[in-house]
Image 1 (cartoon, rainbow, N blue to C red):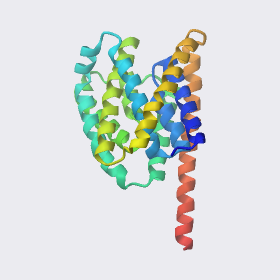
Image 2 (image 1 turned 45 degrees about the vertical axis):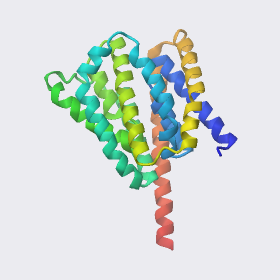
Image 3 (image 1 turned 60 degrees about the horizontal axis):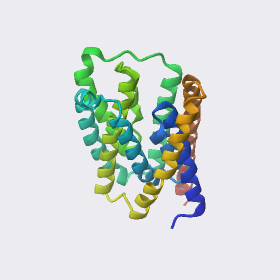
Length: 259
């Protein structure tokens, strides 16, 4: 059974993550995965964030009127990501959680750093045809190992040069398929316990409450200012996850050498 402390952590996490998504249109999986990994561990975090991420991304993916265009444009990316996720999940089963947590922290730090300090990445242009499946494979592989699609997937989608409403819908569609791929992969490898799935379903309530709150905040706070605060916070959280993973590995190595 989950303790009251765990339920409080999950509730607060998804209110915060939903709020971020309500303000800037992304961030729910990144924030929830980072916070839950820092408190509950990576494998539980990956399962708990599945249903709120899936449902909120479906809402984002069907609104906007560009569904057909998005699915056609990024078809090879999404298919490659699906198979990359499935392949990586077989590695996840046999890997050290601390090492994968460190990889997640590195991915989050990279995403936050690029968003904060790097000028606009040039669009792929004529290279898009072959670059999309390559990005899909790498993003899917990292999704299968860490639950996060942000690197290099989100950076690539932002670099393509879509209009804002098309970009938001594209991220919703791509993230939805990535989440389905992750759920299928985790389920196929026995990593979806029934109790955790029920907890993930219950997390829908704070996630949608946070999105509603974020939409209210968006009308009061300039989005560029909020985005900067968000990425700074994400960078700090990523660094914490890396440090925590490194220290855990050092402690484990110390006792292995000692005994």
